[in-house]
Image (cartoon, rainbow, N blue to C red; front, top):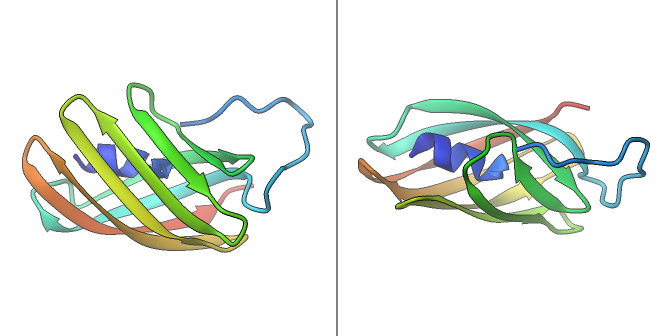
Amino acid sequence: MTRLACVWLLGSIGIALVPGGAAAQSPFDGRWSVLFNTDRGECERSYRAGVHIYDGYITADARGFNLDGRVSRNGSVRAVISAGSQAASGAGRLSRTHGGGVWRGRGNSGYCAGTWLAERRD
């Protein structure tokens, strides 16, 4: 479940295919590293994942997940991710260089919840 929640940002919190040399469409576009921490539940205690934001859409570095994530112009983040019977959602806020928020979901081990911290990598 933690991997599922991590990929949310992404997420991611995957890497979207971005045309080379293309100009960013939102102030948050680029590569990010996200650290997910579990505060409640039987998920991994922490997990780091890479995500990419392009034109405000968040994509996960890992494959095999359905991710619907978006960053608004003011940095507000909302995303939902699922893989099989596992699902997680999260919310938070980004600045141009870092951000954070909360996540929660249900996996094979039951309910889990925690926080996430993001850091821009480009």
